[in-house]
Image (cartoon, rainbow, N blue to C red; front, side):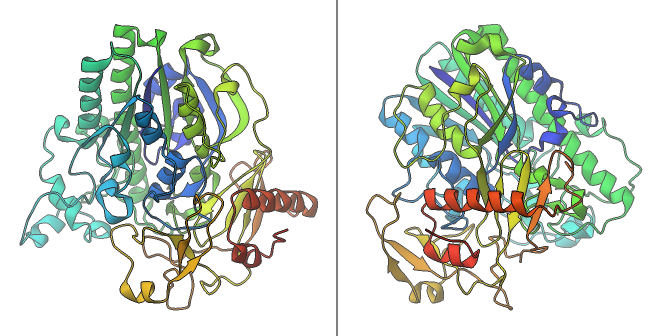
Length: 500
């Protein structure tokens, strides 16, 4: 088997024509949907970016035990399993978090990798004394703290300088060289359409606005406070970047057509999480509840054996943790016993029930559960970090190591079911001034009220539901899934759940 796995970042399903968008031009996503099986109830697991990738590699959620961090020594990793079995695995990416302290163990799992430099705040070009006054004159004040981005952008003058086109260009080089070979996996991973929403001019011109100010393409992770013109500008920039991703994905489809890779190559398209563009009066992710715009994500799969299923859709409840066992199944490899995700290949022939519920969330925030119709956010009654711990053998976070003061109080916890007999460090998490848990990028969680929503009757989650029977059913499902994930004992007490 040959597999091309296209993994975009922050791709909102509501910005894709196959999922109903009428505002964003994505003809190539629609073109692929005609060949692929499209999944309508595909959900995230752990959030945000790097925790989602740990789920992706290992096939199990990690937000119950750990914040943003590397693959642990005991984690299974699908590209490494394939590599050890003789399948060549290659990743092309501009995701700079892989080369930060909190993500440094991911790219090494592949047989080879290529990194495109300069995306977002990648510490790329060396300006010892940047002319901040001159740079900031071109940018909205909301973005003046993004010095690395303003520096990097000075070196992006042609379309071929943009990171996304470079990633797809390197993927094309891999396919030119290797498409006739057998038994390989190519992961094409673009940071786009993650912010900053910086697209080449020809895409930006597709979405005119009345905004007349400095560059505004990076919303702050905060409540919406911008003017209507500024909101329209940010949304237009996101749309332009999504259209760019669509066009370059279309070039990949062109290559499949030209070489008839449809006869022997699997193609998968998905993302790590969605993105709020002002819905619920919020920008982005991380701070607010995990609304459906963030939690329910696109997934489309083409497999030559089920080419006749092209254009069909699946309503089965699936999750990001299912990608790992699916890819192993594609290549004929056994799925490790620690994996909680399920192979999606049985669903390629037709819809069937895969699971009754799925849990998802951020470390330290709510534990969320959905059955595909209802979604339930359960927050602790006392929202502090007092009863919360991180379990790790790799004490690093996003772009830093744990502080010595954090490590001094470490104790050794007994092994979990998935840690292969290895005990772990038990560490207190970072906390804010009021003792609240602090998310990985240094922001407190907000709107931390337990809520139940009926997505069938209230798809925009505007009216919390009072339905004790449904709530209790979802609580029972959440508790069972936490047990299956071997959640730490203190989390059951934190969420007032029965651990037995």
